[in-house]
Image 1 (spheres, rainbow, N blue to C red):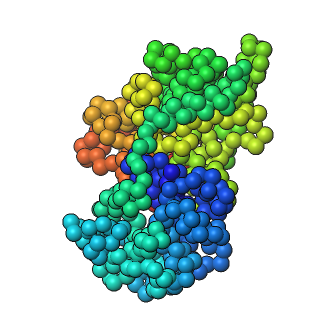
Image 2: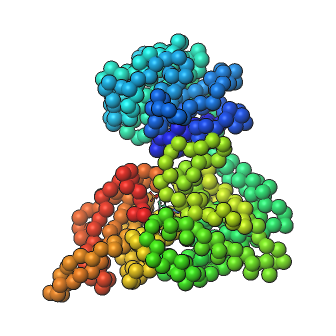
Image 3: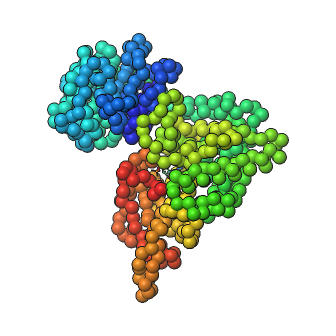
Length: 525
Ligand code: XMP
């Protein structure tokens, strides 16, 4: 295992992803994880991520006492990235200072010949990398040497090969570091001697066994099936493990897309052969959400309302089965875990909470169910591959993601305002259908319409109108953690805009969102 210790960088998850892309098992734990927890994992390599702090800040995250002695004794290779480099330098007796020439963004570096970290760098001694640091190492600890410098003359990489400790000032995990992946591969396979044998098939077998072990032989499990990739794959996996002791429920909460319930229930039956009950809980959800404007409050209310439905569903099941289901399946993914709360293990996370994704942060503390989350170590693309191994049809696997809180986070403000729900459903349907017709659905990670609670002046049929606006959002992304807006051609956008304004009475303006993530998030709330 390659353990990534998270010092709070927004890129930490990417390090884990990149390593898995090399078919190497990698997991991420927060800085502050104890040495005992680390040694339980018996890692071959520990990577220290970047982070927003300076090593000089009071209380900035650090490594547990005895970490380097442990690494030395167990022949664990260590790679520091950015803040990780500063930490290595500081803790081993070197000096880190605020950089005179701070480096943010693209930078060219030059590697020395024949270092361990870059190998025989003859084929690419100069490379473009992505820097983002305010501090720099000015004096190295004993045994270390500089193995790459930036065009500005700053230290870009250091190593102490005898001790098995290496560090990069730049971020090899981001695609802007053009040779970053090669450097990581070389480090892990050639320098640290890790073998690339991690396969999704093994993850699948392991998760099926874990579900079997966690759920006793007489116990029953409830699963909320939304029709999205995650819950569908999670349900299929759990069904493989425990068969018909799995009871799926599709909750129509009034926040679904156009004709979603009808469509999804149809395909569950015809393609997936999973036992699914449809519960219409529209009134309950919408009455709880009436007048609520704060996005985080909406998420929490929705999380609690879902749980109330599952509990009611399990009371009904108890009547049928003579036993209450004690587990709930959630299609939680790794990014949800990273963004919502500290990953499992001890210690606290040093990254900021961005949103409480309802399937993690919004669950009530007094919930009756134990959770089964077989996908919580996986990224979306990995879940799609796992789904293919489980023979889940492409019609599910290729669907764009849809957030748990549904249209509630796509209607800014009160979801019950006017006919916002109806309006946004139609606009969304027109937009996504146009994307399908143009053959663009599979290149786009996610596309949807957002209801803006503003009225603007328009002129329709020679009359002045004062109606609502919708925003369209379409993005490309690898995993939803970072995203770029999709560059449609202008004719496509013009056609969609006129279709929307011509067919939805309350809309007289359509805008297109041209913001990436960061600085925005994918959803507007
Ligand atoms: P954000 O808006 O956080 O979205 O950049 C990243 C991805 O997560 C989805 N998303 C959610 N999924 N519950 C979910 O299950 C949520 O509360 C939630 N909020 C965002 C979003 O659609 C995108 O794919």
